[in-house]
Amino acid sequence: MLRIETPFHGAVMNSRHGRPVAGGLKIAVRGEAPPDARVTVNDALAHRDGAKFSAEVVLTAKETDIIAVAADAQRREERRVRVVWDRHSRPRYRVAIDDNSFFLRDIAQKGYVSLFDSFYLKGLRELNRRYGAKFVLNIYYTTGDDFSLPQFPDRYKGEWRDNADWLKLAFHAHADKPDRPYENATPEKLAADFDQVAEQIRRFAGEETYSPPTIIHWGIVQPSAFPVLARRAVRVLSGYFRWTGGSEDANYLFDRERCEWLSHNEALKDFDTGIVFSLVDLICNLTPVEKIVPALEAAASDPCRAEIMDILTHEQYFWPFYHNHIPDHFERLEAAVRWLTEHDYRPVFFHEGLLGVPE
View 1 (tube, rainbow, N blue to C red):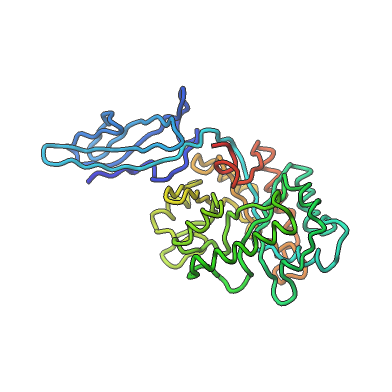
View 2 (cartoon, rainbow, N blue to C red):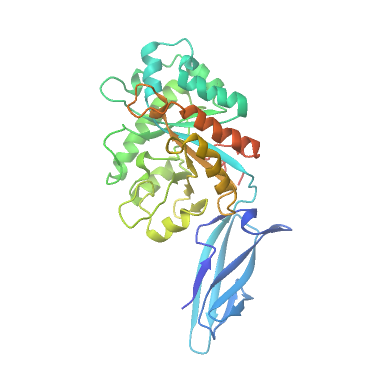
């Protein structure tokens, strides 16, 4: 039976996955075929070693179909995969912060003169000033009975606009509870919640501050909802893509094969919707400060994960009143951003271009 083992269908490939050549990127294609079959890859004869075959293909376009054909006197088989060339790739990172609502409630209720009278936004601004870090804050429509987004004033709109080059707001969910709100929700429900939050962001913070989301609460939506998100300019969805044989969170209900591949690789494109799925490399609230750098070093030493660092944490752990408050949460985040900056990773927003670089 003919099978292409690598590259994986939908893989986003950069210079670490092959060898740059004039006008393109030369990559290896490997697979398995009946031992006596003649195998070609994109019309070039492949090298055979028993049941294995190998060949090289040069990527010259944004997307390339790789077609393997195995033929003998009795039959002809064909398999194909499509890959994406990250032509303008460079080492880069993004920071997303999930579950945001407390800071909006705090600003609205305290009536601060400036957004940055909030210790939370002030802390993020300090990281921007020291390292150039950029942040996307994924927000809820409501914190519960005492606050919802229509209560947030629009008098800070100019300040939001002045800082929109490094600080964005995006939809996350209607509220923190229930858990896994979109696991079984209809596309219409997700669309309604999405539009409600997006409308409010644009109202009080302006178009410049609005960002399409890259993480939906709990990282679970029905596949039928992907077109809904794509039509709302969602270009990337990040997750953990772990697979232990049961019901998993943060894998967007992917099957085992895709989860297992993505759990060890940076990014995978769904060609039906155009959405790219990205592997989260570090979750700051789950990683003690002394383990932040080793975790990043491990990712950076792996060619399959080294180019793009997807950093995640959660707002609630910054707040002293929260029952699971992490006193050194900002230290963890700074340790990550400092290491990335010192190792020439540049901050990006994933919704711009292809994972933050021109396409």
